[in-house]
Amino acid sequence: MFTYQTAKISKTLSENRKRLEDVFSNCEDLNIFPWQYGPDLTHTALSIFFGTLVQDKKLNFMKESMQDLVPHEVGPATIVTPEDVIKFFGRHGVSAQNAVLVDSFNQAVDNILKGHIVIFFDGWDKVLSYAQAHQVEMRPVSEPVTESVVKGPREGTVEQLERNIGLLRSRLANPHFKIEKFRGGGATKAEIAVGYLEGTVDAETLTEFKKRMNAAKEGDILETAYIEELIEDSTYSPFPQYRSTERPDVAVASLLEGKIIVMVQGTGTILICPGLFIEFFQASEDYYHRVIFSSFIRLLRIAGFFISLTLPSVFIALTTFHPELIPTNLLMTVLDTREGLPFPAFIETLIMIFFFELLREAGIRLPRPVGSAVSIVGALIIGDAAINANIASPAIVILVALTGIASFAMPQYSISISIRLLQFPLMILAAVLGGFGIMIGFLLIMLHLTNLRSLGQPYFSPLTPFRPKQLLDVFVRAPIKTLWHSLRKREMRKI
Image (cartoon, rainbow, N blue to C red):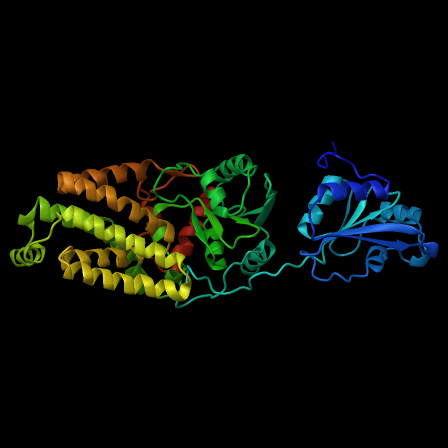
């Protein structure tokens, strides 16, 4: 049985054609284009390409393949023989732009799959591979939907790897910015690019990352999320251990901080490694506004995190176990609104949050013009109907709405998912043990955060272990000059 991965290119053109037809059987978009050259057009060559990957299907293959055979060395293209082709390319190589000389059948097949035009000559065990015709329609550079800003750059990454690298290169014109490419395994054979700033990235972290990448890249990779799960320290942790972005300015800023980025052909998401807990509260816009305003907004996000995480459980604990901690007037109002309700506070809150999450997920999955209307109008209608039917109290509806709004303040969607997951065990602990249960839940979360690692680095750094010199960009943002000075001092210590 023919195995193209280990086969060599045959000198017989008909055999190469048969092999290609076997490898690409039932591929209706494969074009095998025979053409003649030489004296009286007696010699044959084959141009093979996928019509769905090549934009111009009327290329002059004769001229394209013979453009390096200059007349003063060989003669006019009409009298070129196979011996001339072998002699010329064997001595000079391929000088045409985007063209390579391939001597492996496996590589020839891979190049065809990449959208190259591969040319086989009769009597020659090598092929010419041209990439300039590769053209697949791609989404143009536009503003990212998930990371919109009021002030700052508007361009976002696309699904084309080379264009994404170009967006980064244009912003970081530095020879120390290194890009290493890998070819994934499995059926996808995804093209993966890893970027880092040499001299700034931690050497041990980079070594650990490459070690994990070597083990992870052998499978089918479709998106950077695959790599994220394969190389993370704790797969079952509710907290994300790597950040992702669609903004070139965020990726470049991360490189300047010593991070490693990962890009995959076919996806516009850039993975940033490692990701620390406090970094999920930082947004690119923090550095485009004034210091006071940026610091205030960041404190709002941190407050939103705690509100969305604890508000339902605190309400359950107060109304069930600790009503004496509620001011009298507020307590009377809550009791009046809860009079005649069939469910206790825990069940009521659980039901309302569950259906709120269901509405939010439905709004995401529905078509965009319909989704926003369904999520907003659905929440209003269901909330009002639940109050009128005496199934839920107005206090619970307000509480669930405030919890949802607070979770929307997170700049990273992945940390919002963590909050949504952790709400439920905290509510259960509050319903069973009251305030003491919330304390136990927080203690367990803190123990997990302090033990969690991201590429071997402490996830809760610089809070645990405590590094006061790195607190300039944690809860509030220090001025740019101060951050520059701190970054230079850190780099000097590495040297």
